[in-house]
Structures are given as structure tokens and as C-alpha cells.
Amino acid sequence: MAYTDQTHIILEKTSHPGNIGASARAIKTMGIHNLALVNPKKFPDFGASARASGAEDVLDNAKVYSSITDATASCHTLFATSSRARSLETRSLTPPGSWRHDSKIT
Image (cartoon, rainbow, N blue to C red):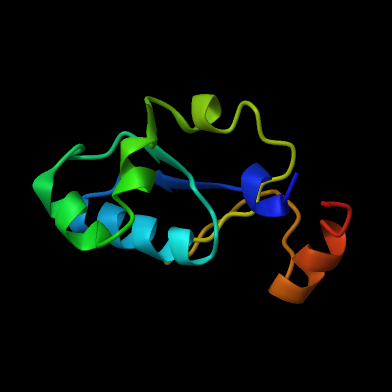
């Protein structure tokens, strides 16, 4: 099984449907097809479909969850990013460090 089959992209509380579509397009370009949405403001939505541009299959197969706990229940390793400053009591890794940490993925 390829690592892309085991990779899930999770978006939480997306406020604009176009961002969901653009994300679907971007992850499909990387060979990833597993998109999870946690409490999206509007989905499904024409704006998401319009921005998906060739990645409608990713949107059609996207799973919607009501909590981040539910969305991550089957995950073994999580990598998170945010544009907001956070104060978390978890181990932080730089991108190169995270790849070394998760190098056991085949």
C-alpha cells in the first residue's frame, strides 16, 4: 500500500467552500485522495466544486465529521499545521524532523 493511500488531509471549520475545493485539487495533485472535513461551514457547495477543477472525485469521497476526535480516530501519526500561534503541550517537529520521525511508512 502506498503512503498516499494511508494519508488523510483533515480540514477543520473551513469558512469558505472554495478553500475546500482548492485543497481537494492540491491534494489530488500530490496523489492523495482522502479528505476529511470537520464542521465545515458549507459543504457540499458549488463554490467547492468550482474550485476543485478536476478533483471532484476527492470532494465526492470526502467524509464529514462533527469532531476532530472522530476524524482522527483511525490515525496512527498526526501532523498538524496552523496559521495561528498555538500553545500546545505536544512535541513539535520541524518538517525535516517529521519525515525522519515517520520514515517507517512504506
